[in-house]
Each structure stands twice: as C-alpha cells, then as structure tokens.
Length: 153
Image (cartoon, rainbow, N blue to C red; front, side):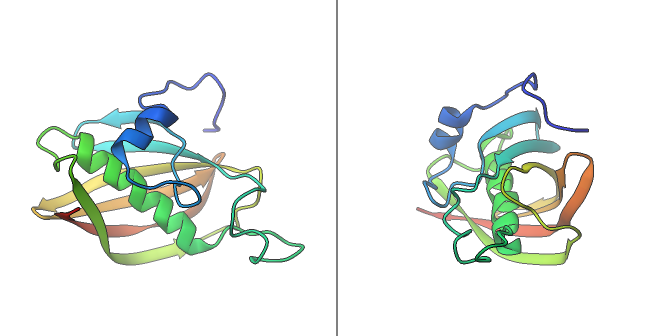
C-alpha cells in the first residue's frame, strides 16, 4: 500500500502539534491517516533532505538513522495513547522506556514517505506496550515492540 495525496487525514499537522510536545527538529509525525480507538494508529512522516540529521548521517549518502525511525514509532504511539478512549491525559508526557525485537530491513532516504503502523499490545497503567511496523510504499523498513510510560510533564 503506498501513500497518496488522497489519503484520509484523521489528525493534520496542526492537530498533531496540539497532541505532541515535540517541535522541529524532533517532531517526527506529519499527520495521522487512520485511528482505531485502543487498537491501531497509522501515521505519516515525510522524510525530506532538510532533516537535521542528514548532513552528518552520512555525508554524500544521506540515510535516516534507525533511532529516528524508532522515535517516529514512539511519537505515533504517544498520539495513540493520548487520543484513545480512557487514554492518558493530555497534560502527561509519554516517556519511551523500552524497545524489543527491533529490526531494520531497508534504509530510508530523503524523499521517502514513512507509513508508521502501531498496534496496542498491552496497557498496564502507567505502561503502554505496542507493536509496530514502518513501511516505505509496500516495503517493510523497520519493526519492533515499544514500551512507554505515562509521566508528569
């Protein structure tokens, strides 16, 4: 499934910025295209040549760092946790606490569009455990399980 300009938008960029505390250069979600309460979220990150990490990773051969792909997954998970029914309060922060079984399958380059799919695994307040996959077009580029904890801002 590839991203098109006709995709539905559940939360646009302005709405994402009201949900997440992150800002440039660390905001990794451009929009949310699917949301199933307490089940699933699909978010989009347009990877541009202007990303702050590309000049150093790697000069002449820009590749998105895997940790930034993980961060995009975590931010999609934070939106999911905050917008789900009986989710975490908007004034709480979502602290990334663990990543398990993470695999990077293909490199991500400027111009790629990441489709981040996160699924609820277990919620044991204040912990949220999610499984996710990241695609460019129909190609899997990363997957793993992430855990985060609700915390005070």
